[in-house]
Amino acid sequence: MSKIFGILFLLFTFNISAQKVHKINYTGLLTLSNGTPLAFEMELIEKGGIVNGFSVTGKGTPDETKSDVSGIFNKNTKTYKLKETQVISTSSESDLNTFCYINMAIKEKGKFTLKRFEGTFIGLLTNRDTCAKGGIVLMEKEKLEKIKKKVEKKVDKKIKKRKKIEEEEEEEEEEVKNPVLSTQVLKDGEDMYIQWNSKKLVIYIWDANTEDGDKINLTINGQQILSNFTTKKKRKKVKYRLLEGENRIEITATNTGTTPPNTSRIEIVDSKIKYPILTQLELGKSAIITIVK
Image (cartoon, rainbow, N blue to C red):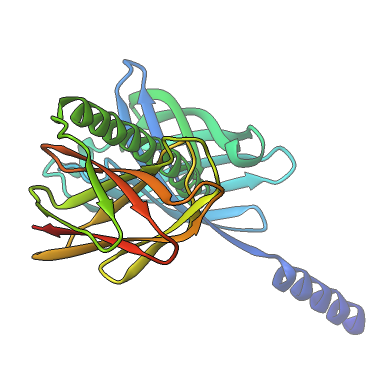
């Protein structure tokens, strides 16, 4: 008999030790019957259907209160029955006898990332009088953070996209306002000096004549921006943030196409003015534009 008791005791002990401990953080809202929402959080530890932990009501407010929570969890129905039992700490100056202790029944609803717990609650005073009623919605804090990050990422992406569109619209409006000077023709070895106003440089490059395979290198301050670039009727836009002082722009012909010389239309845009330029270059020759900021 003692052997049987010993075996049963071992089996019971093994079963208890094999039960998994689940620690979950929930966050959400209590909504009072008059429609007033209250921030509500819980940190629960569940083992074998027995639940213990704490709740935080009104987080971040002058009445923030942390309370003990206990109850049960039905794994089959995915239902919690929980109640606050005592105040652990509070920022409120109210008498503890006036505190409203939450008793709730919540059930799992939804699927995947929208999985949550919903239900009702009753608030009871220490003398068991009802002090509040309403609904409750909670979600695992980790899942909610993931959803929040996804939403923030989408919003940030939309803001950046909108900002880019606005910047392009501003640039187009600025270009319309900019006065245009007469076209400057630059041939082999010729230089051009421009006194600049803004911090950035916008260059448009294209072939205004018949596309005949003209190719160029574009170098700014020793940095090659375009390499063996074929000029076409569609304008190529290049943006560059200028250095203080002198900035050297060099256009070099790497191919003269079928009808030499290499001819390229270039438009340099300052914040207040546009400079139209026509380069006529032999193979390997360059034109220099020096911008003084």
